[in-house]
Image 1 (cartoon, rainbow, N blue to C red):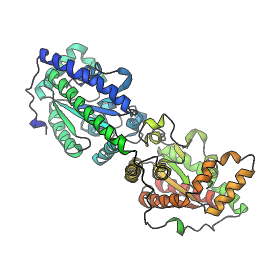
Image 2: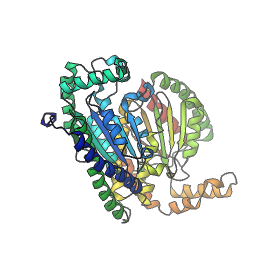
Image 3: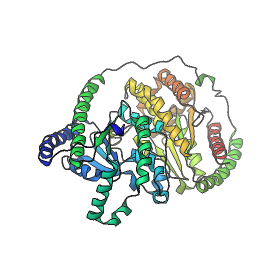
Image 4: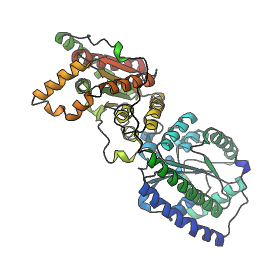
Length: 493
């Protein structure tokens, strides 16, 4: 693709100033309109070292309100960040709806980082697959993010001239700030890597815009003009989408294999059996938590289940066996006002456990295909594509080495009614029962259909579901503990 660019194109200063005044004013106006329409924008400015991308971004920034955007660079990632799943930092840096993130270097820099001649400069090398990159970008664009990917191409001759210019302006020590060192041989090697990158990731939802960069003024105007046209189109599409969201369809009931019907809820333990097994599980977990830390393997334990299904009790017994410095319990409720300003997976990515630590989630990202589906908080298109998004995300976590345990705590309607009444009649527990719990109980058939579909579509070999027979709290707690123990032992040994 790069050979098709005409690098001889130039723009004189007079024409540049004229175009910059016109498109610059439009860019500032469109930024304000995107903010009002809650349209988030991510701009990647990739390209050759010495392609003057910093200057181009600076020109772009002068035309926008600095309160509405942030500039990032993947080259500034710390070693700690590099030990987390590949996209964690990018999720944490995700702009909220209506704001803009600009990347001087992005996930593509990290993907191609292994081509650097002197690998000692880049610390912990990171890598991911292009399929994961495509999936990540599609999750964003499906959610309404405008993703603009620019690659500034310069000739080998122009790159050399630009580097000499930078050396004169900043001195040779400026190169220490830049981890990606190129030499003449690297230029030819990187061309092949970049061509593969374009072939793998030039998609309909996130196409590459190749920018002829030998003339900096010409390159700057190309990018700003492209941004203007893209944001105009995005705002028009957002208006159409906002109108279509007013259509509410009834919940979908799909004829699938009924997993929950096959669960034997008669399984139980006596109090004495429970106490004996609980002590053994706690001792084992204490030892395994140390193994996790020493091997720098992380663990995610995700709990879903019926209201009053015993999630809190199971989490309490799990947490009590662990060193509190090595785990965090993340209670998940309806998204708050801040969380609503981001992609639905954002609030989970920002709570990824550090290497060697444990994250426990009391309700999870699966709310997208349950409560958000049933209560119409998500459109049909949004929750239906969530199965694939969740599987892709969990695959990334598993490939990174994170151990995933997912539990559905299952009780029958009679047991739920009994526990609801017990809570109402106990002054110490009445806070646990709300009118919403009783209202949700009336929608049991709809939730049951959603749960069955969730279990079938998202139970994978790398992140399997464990359905816990939870009519007996003792049995349920021990099964959870033993399942976690087995998962850690299998992963480490």
